[in-house]
Structures are given as C-alpha cells and as structure tokens.
Length: 330
Ligand SMILES: NC(=O)c1ccc[n+]([C@@H]2O[C@H](COP(=O)([O-])OP(=O)(O)OC[C@H]3O[C@@H](n4cnc5c(N)ncnc54)[C@H](O)[C@@H]3O)[C@@H](O)[C@H]2O)c1
Image 1: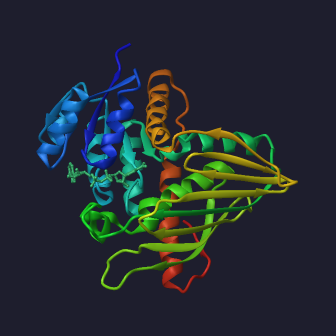
Image 2: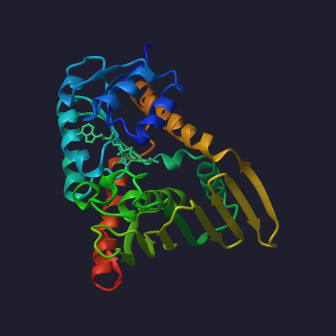
C-alpha cells in the first residue's frame, strides 16, 4: 500500500521535526509544503523531496494530499482546519487545537460533517517515559495516584530567537498556558486516565506584554487526583513530573523515568537521549495516525481531548482574573 500523503501548512520550527519524523515512517510521506514565506516552504519541501506550493488552496488542489498537517500559529488553526476538512482531507492539527473553545467546536463540527479524522498533535503521549509511566500506573505499580505535579519552563526571551507571534495575543491566543500548558494538561489527563473538571491558578504578565509568561495552579480531575503545575519563563529548559501514589512515586524528566518505591529505593527503567526521543515522539504519532487511517485502529487522541486542554486554559485565565478561585471547566 502506498504511503499516506501529507501536506504541511507552515514550514517553521516544529515542521522541521515533522519532516524529520516522517522520513523515518514508511507509512507516510510528505507530498507538499506551503508557507507564507516561500523560502521556508522551498527549504523544507526540498529536504522532504516534496513540492513547495503557494498556499492552502494549491495544497488542496493536489489529490495526493490525504492529510493536512497544520504547523502554523495558534489562531490560524481554526480557519485552515475547517477549509481542509470541507475539502475532505484528514487533519493533524498541532496543539493547541485552537485558541478558543468556540473555534475548537467549529473544527470538530467541520471534521464530523466531512467524515474526516481530526488528530490533535499532543505528541507528548508518545514519549517513552510517558507511555511507560502510564503502563506502570495501570498495573498499580505505585497504587492509586494521590498527587501529580509538573514544573516546566519555556523561553520567552525577546532576543529574536523566538517567533514574534509567540507574544502576540491575536496569533498566540495566550502565553505559556496556551503554548506549553496544554501539554501538561493533556499529559496529566492521559496518565491519570481522567478528565479535567476544574482549575484554580494565577498568571503573570510582564509589564507591557499581551500574554502571560508564567502561571501556576491546580487542576482537579474527575478521578480525584489533583495536578499542580508551575510553568515559568526561562532560558534554561526543565520539565519534571512527579506522580505520588499510595506506594511510591514516578518521576519523569526529558530523558527518562525513575520509579521510587515505598522505601525510597529508585530504579530507572527508561532512559534515552532527549532530543532523539523528541523526534521519535513525532514518528510514533505518524505511525499511530497511519494505523487509524489504514487499519481502522482507534485514534490515540480524540478531538474532545484536544478541546479539553483549551477549555482548561480558558478556565485558568478566568480563575486568574478572579484572584485564583476554583473555576469549572466547560
Ligand atoms: N508538539 C510540539 O512539541 C510542538 C513544538 C513546537 C511548536 N508546536 C506547535 O506548532 C505550531 C507552530 O509552531 P512553531 O514553533 O513551528 O512556529 P514557527 O513560527 O516556527 O512556524 C510557523 C510557520 O507558519 C508560517 N505561517 C504563518 N501563517 C501562515 C499561513 N497563513 N499559511 C502558511 N504558513 C503560515 C510561518 O511563516 C512559519 O514558518 C504551533 O501550534 C505550536 O504550538 C508544537
């Protein structure tokens, strides 16, 4: 069976990972790339052995584009996704699904009406340490989870190394919560096998900025285990998750997983090179997507889960405006 044809919209930083990952997956191939910056489109298309095309309409004119992959600024996801769905293309939309819950609903409705797959790119589910932790939790390795906490950083330095749209509310739809918080929310939901129901938190927006660079708070899930999060701006990258259960802890970091037993003994069953693993997480996402489209396997993420992450961010913003009150997620 020929590989599924991917059409990439947006040839920026994450698109480079997508291209590198697709090159490792025989079930998919890049057939076309577009970007408002034609040089970027050409550079990535050349690397992938694909065609660089002018815009989304040109991309949709190609019958070999079976899946449209959106790797563009957040606020552009909704309109582009709806147009691609109406044309009958399956969708892989980078996180966050959209910047508002109404736009998430608009994309979901368009995909349902067209009968196409809508896959949200919460690819952290594909990290080895995350998958191993989920298995251990399901096997009861640390008993019932009692407390989840996650700390991570993101670089909001304004020295030209980050795209300008990151700090432009109209395009980003928010700051650190919208950019990386959705990963924490999705990963906690998936690991705890739970749905977020309420959130309380505080956000910090630097003077003169349109978006928050820091946020901290608590998310409550329908299963009862709360998740505490602290997202901070900083040049140094860190990403640490601790899940405390009745009989031990799981600690996740970008290069592996540590299991702590009730006596404090530690074991490190999963360890790898973090940068390589990052590319592999995208490769596994494409394999999973192909299994769904080719073999009818259940999708590893549902549109409702992509929407839930965005709804949680908006409930956090509402909580922060009200001084940190517990706020329901709808
Ligand atoms: N899953 C992950 O780990 C991960 C990592 C980084 C970024 N992302 C997500 O990927 C998306 C893109 O982020 P990025 O860091 O690659 O940003 P980026 O700025 O590096 O790339 C975005 C690209 O989109 C292009 N673009 C803008 N408007 C366009 C339009 N109308 N049509 C076509 N192209 C257009 C820009 O010219 C740019 O090349 C965001 O949703 C972001 O949150 C996900």
